Image (tube, rainbow, N blue to C red; front, side):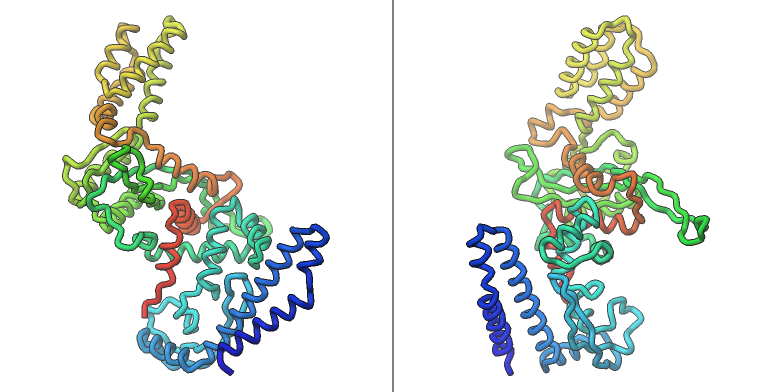
Length: 453
């Protein structure tokens, strides 16, 4: 029997079941639209599962599949292979038993499954790429694994909490093996573009196990301390509007440790040919760990100094203006302080840093050490506060793109006092969520399952 005949048989059985059930008329006649849709959805899922099972079982028993296995095995230097049944979990969560060839011996460098089917088709924990994609997407977009499991099952995808957790973490770790490029668009480059780069830290509670058990001797004791995952963004500025380009999508990634974050950022910028960019704006808050490394990194990557625009986030600058006002003596009344703050803010917005000092000294002749400390802050970032120039040249003045990224990518999903994450698992999940929110999920999944034959 040919595959076409087998498929036709499955479809005819589906048609017969629909005619026998007649649930369409029953539900619609009783004004039960929800029941109609639910029944039709369940029926089409069953059809999909039957077709997938029929086709996969037919193909894995075919001569063409055996030939493909032989070619793959030779490429990977597999030893003798034995026929052994395995199963694969498809998009709906159904597990299908299929014919498979198991390699009794593989090279030491081979880290994938010895089951040739799973190695060839890049399954993860015996789950198909579509199942992994759906599960992982729900896992990182929902507020918890439990909620993801509930929503998936309501949509007809079988997935308990443990399966959701394990699949998403393993999918994320798999992506991290080729993290610099796996979410890129085809032939993506920064050549000839005006680029904005920013970096900042979020907050997550990290679980660190101790070498001792609890009083019952059943579980490891652990510390749960707040850590700062470092998130960075690479995006394109539209030179016509001076805003983030609507035709280009941002690129995010995150890791722990200052040196690690800049090392990872450097790899991204290298692969994207940052040295060919028209202009590169690096914008951030006043953190020393950022500004001690940013320009040096860009110069080492081949970006010309004249093409680098360093910018202190304007809104962080206003916080230091507030600190000045806070330290002005009480003899200056509230209305005078408010008027002075608005004046200072206007001066900062126009990049007139030296005039900020003069404006303050008109109100108080003698400044205290706290105010002088704030003056030094602005002097240190003097060239990074030319906001009037930045605006006239079409550059950003605020780091909203990274502040928003911290909130949406890290804080809304992974910042919770009652959630304790293993660092390696958290990094994998943040990567998935960042890729999804940046609208790069399709590129990532396509590259994840590309066969290396």
